[in-house]
Length: 100
Image (spheres, rainbow, N blue to C red):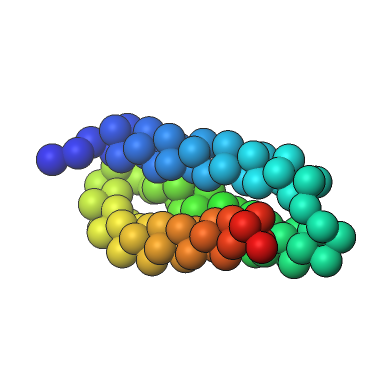
């Protein structure tokens, strides 16, 4: 069974990875055409909102009392899986503008 600290560390690692992806995509967006830049920046803002949501979920786990963390973990895990899919889709949409 994963401890609270291990699980929170895993979520932080995922958030850090997404943050790196965001920074890379922002940098790469500067090389895109003006039309593509607008679309890319809109989608980056959507991705940022998803990152913020993930950060809030992680913070809720950090703030949870130890005796309640299992219940919150189950809920967070379900939402986190949905969030991972949404982030992956957003990143793919952004990347599609670079190959156009």
